Length: 416
Image (cartoon, rainbow, N blue to C red; front, top):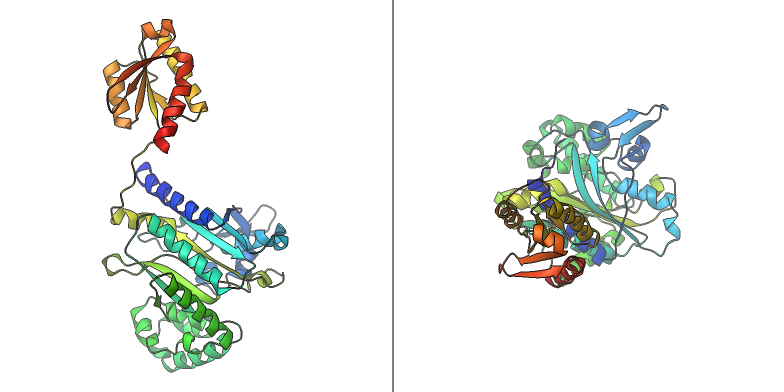
């Protein structure tokens, strides 16, 4: 786990704005869920045989003796909130987005942290493949708006409960024939979750599964048609994609559509985020079947990619004016004026300690504010201020009781 310092914060804030804008322009509404949930929520939905539950989940007993866990992923929590808060009776689909920290006891490596931030969306109540396309396009738009260009869309269909069992039998037979060449984890997965062998990062396992039967060639008619429509509409939107038969995602609740967005910089294949369809998830929580689809974007990885690509973040501190004071009476008036400006929505800062006018104006220059207000001994007693345009150097005198309104108007024009 780590601190996120100001140098990185500007990238996080820029990404957050890009994601929020993309989500809200697509009709998604914000939701937050608790950091701590019953551990059974994730065991029932994510799957007991997944790496998340087996190796990575922070689970412990509360003081009442109940087994709880730090939230390892967002979809199960949002699905629970959807059911518990009566959203099934809302107009469907219900479209939600979130920005929350997730917790996984994972092996530390570049871009991977045990507390990591995730931006995600979940949409419930609509089976149409066009919702899949909407969600995929939203994820791509957010990443593109954040300034990343070297990315690729990887997509696959992993079928449904009707066609997947047959494929699992075909795949299991293939894996058993090549079992000697597999790593210890994949040998175990043959019995517990054979699809996860396709996602193994061990080179020897990748060489074996290169020749494995593909799910896309074993889809039922319903899944085949669903996937076909998605690809047709991605083509219509000029979204470039690669059908990746190895892509299965690591969670048990996924069916049909799965996708990831990869960072292709320097030939790497690091996933910046991904998601898929999970039509059976609500049934795992004891409710009726509700279709759903969503994704999660790894904010830490995206920020690292933004920094590597040297994405330029627009300069700005949130400050509009620096208040310069000279003298005891001026200091009191400046201090009050700073808060009057802030209360009016104008970003204001000032030097609380003594300092020469030159030193204070240097600080204003360093903060890149468009305006400075100067109150000296004379202005303090005459209830006036000097308003200085920091770009042109032009100075004007205003009554103190008129300066807040004047700056509101000027800043409003700058923001248009």
